[in-house]
Image 1: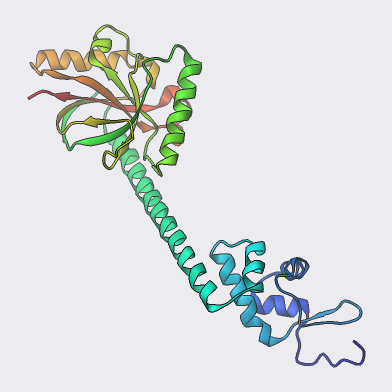
Image 2 (image 1 turned 90 degrees about the vertical axis):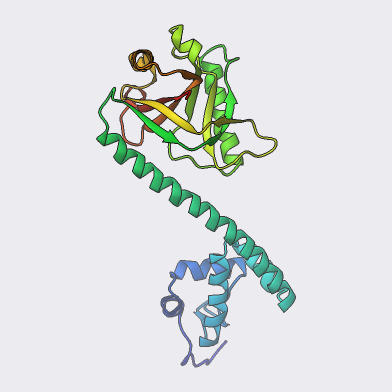
Length: 275
């Protein structure tokens, strides 16, 4: 285009500054056909008009909704009010799902912080009782695991199951072990992995930790040295004539987010007192 007066138009750098992006973004949008300059001179010099600002803001809004440039181009090529309604309804649903996930993450972070603070105030091997509400758990049966490789696979499957259910837990995976195994000195013969859930749902393998009074102990040397903690709990229960339920629960309080190794984990071990 010869003898063109570009007064009133913006160069690529100027327009990029107006809309808050880089020149490279505009070049990329032009290359993909999503957003092109109003005028392209013979020397490939690009010029943009103020009337294109609204169009660019629309593209930015669609990107904020999570659309790819390809999706944006396809939509813009055939845009109409009906398609806009469908698009916005779809994005509204997606945003509601994201808000739910963010809410779960916020709860996860808050609970993790609370548990970490509490762990710093409780003395190791201190035995105490609590009154707890019922708690449903999503569980994975590990009684058939033959070696550590099987255990690793079951841990992976449990984590995948939790993710598929949209679950976040403020601690690492917990363990359930039968009291008869503990009494027999088999302190690592776990029956289940567990993750706390809000309620039982059909089709899930779940376990109910019943409401009631629980006997607890804090253990700060990981999973492989819990024998002293279990012996202390059993001895305390015997001395105080406390009948105990069928399962111990191992809850991880401090994991590798706050300690250096698996052997340094802090656990809260508890069991229901049969009143």
